[in-house]
Length: 135
Image 1 (cartoon, one colour):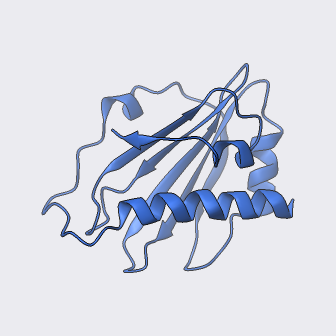
Image 2 (image 1 turned 30 degrees about the vertical axis):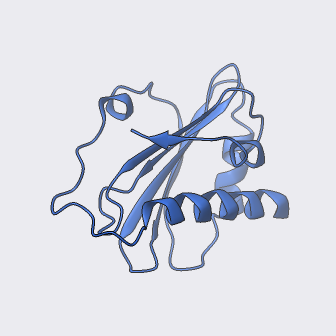
């Protein structure tokens, strides 16, 4: 379980770093991309709000890992260094693979949405190794 927490922290740290650049972000939040709003609905593994330095609870990570057949989604909101909320949507897809949507629209230094597909992933650790990009 510790490896999952380390991988989740590494993925989150990398994505938050990408979203919190030095340039001033947009004056208004970025619109929600249709790729996100049109995504398939999956069973929920919860919505978690974390404080600075907090880790995703083990039971939520276990829920994702155990959902390999039917799929599942976990929403995690955590603050950037400046305190702006960023929400990460970790998704296990039915039939295999993982993906993550990152909503940085409330980040005053980033303000973008990010998507990381990882069709070959079997774990959150695998997702952390995949490359994504802005939506």
